[in-house]
Length: 272
Length: 324
Image (cartoon, rainbow over all chains, first blue to last red):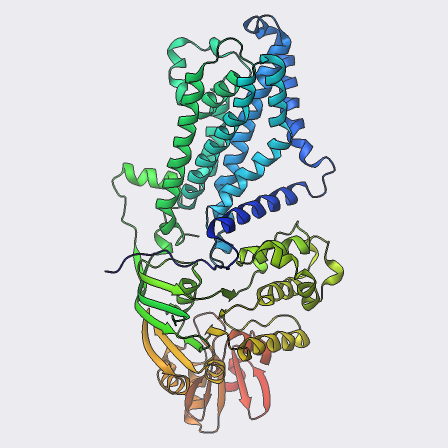
């Protein structure tokens, strides 16, 4: 039995395989953004309006009730809710768009030799780019104003990059599994709601009973929020352990997702 | 010099579509009841070894489901062989119908760039050719409009223009594409003919034995996933005609076929019962495989169950009319 080899990709002398991969992801992401915002005057600003509106709503509903947990400061409640809303909406939007992306492009994959990873990566990249123009810089400013800590400010983009990497890991795994289980989209919608509710987005983490809190550590959104809050609004000595652990976990999810996709890839071309 | 295309012992085993675990719920129930069936697999290609030299024009023929289109997908890199190896020397392009994949919300220009890059060209190269593509498709006036405004014929013209704009060293063609009205179809044909003249390596998959025999100098005949014949086009054509299934394999127009076979001057076209547009011409008691879907459209046989061809006069009649 001879060795199993990957079939050749169409190559051009001027382009390396990596350049082509990156160009494809970039163009697919641009395509998604273009068709999403075509005919919308506010365009990418919508990605800012959404978390701002949600934060305003949470503040109106729960701001005064939970103020005591935030040192009596409504401002602290607002920024705390805002950074969490950004993380959770980005994570859920990116992963649910990535989930359908391979199946949605099945026709194309059956005609042109394209790395199937292109599509889930493009979904995550499109969402990350959108946030990078709006909410991510806002977090940098929040960190600068509230923490006055240059180390924390520098860590903001690193932690956000880890959040994106984790979303990519989940997105790519979901995209591969969706090929086999076409009801996964419903399940993931329910999971998304659970992840949102079990993350301390609009309520203080301390409110959750100690016995239950231990289980919530498995929630990837909750640990993302904790790490983002650590670098944007927390004061005092930096909890390097939380940050380091989060980055390691995010990298782990990214690698696992990729391995799962690689493992299933050969099989799923038969089901598209 | 390495071969343009080399396949060594290529075997492809695929999951069959009927045994899909298409949802979690059903899979979970099966698992619980201990009835998790094994995935069914089918060997689509078996130990295919082919070496195609630079500049060769090769036709791949075979009945439906024989694996000939799959073979093209293996060469194009769309499918990865289960065993064996594939190598392609030089830039490769496949003439394919893109229409289904256009993003309706994007402008024509954006779709051109996107598909050009998907087909393996750099963005810079594609951007430099936008005008030529729009011009060939005769859609220059619509360049910035969303692609959804195009009629299906216009979309087909655009996809043909994109796919054929860049001349590759190795060209894969699955059925000869012909799109649009008669005038545009001739334009497409002229462009395809130019590829032939320019000494590209061409692999053409077709049902149409006549086209293959006329345009290719070598034919690979695939049947049940194996290479049954590989050699000069004319010998393949003769061999192919002699093995076309007997009249009994048609349900519709059975008697008609019988009638035509008895009558040495009768010519009858019968649509195959497999549901697609394969037509057989029975002329002088012998069966010829003459048609492809494109050929049928061109000659107006589309949708006809039975067509009588009487020298130059072509008329379509219902089965009953002929038999009475």
